[in-house]
Image (tube, rainbow, N blue to C red; front, side, top):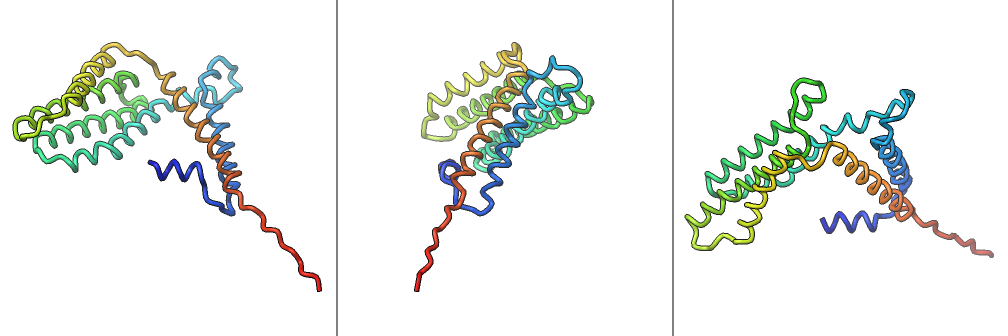
Length: 207
């Protein structure tokens, strides 16, 4: 993560520096077009429903990133068979939810809103950690960190609450996504000028 941030803040000088600028400008235009503020516009604004239409795909992408970047590593690191099986079950459940988000785009099935999905993910993670605490205490002389057990219980409680009583809607997810696109685009535009090679001054030697 530190290398990635350093690379973003200090890009290398490249001949194709203008690509940063083009992608950044296109990103800002896309972020503006995906804003839900266009919903009340007339029909000639053909992009007015694009944002709310892709919310499920945004949720699906977020779940896949969580599965690929975090949960797969947890499965590989688990030594206890029971905890490993529970983590695999968590992976399968969330993968099915991600698939459901895609199928919902085609009106095949209906999955819960983003708040309910987040609640389910938190409940799964907290439940697995509680089981891990139990088996850790049972077969290990080292005590399971109490603060992490408290976090696991909080995840379960908050997850059930979010699942039963959603606190935010699809619009919140869309606004977060739009803000992230615009921020990344601004960084890319800034990187374009930082990555622009400096022209070398050439001096002609007079005879």
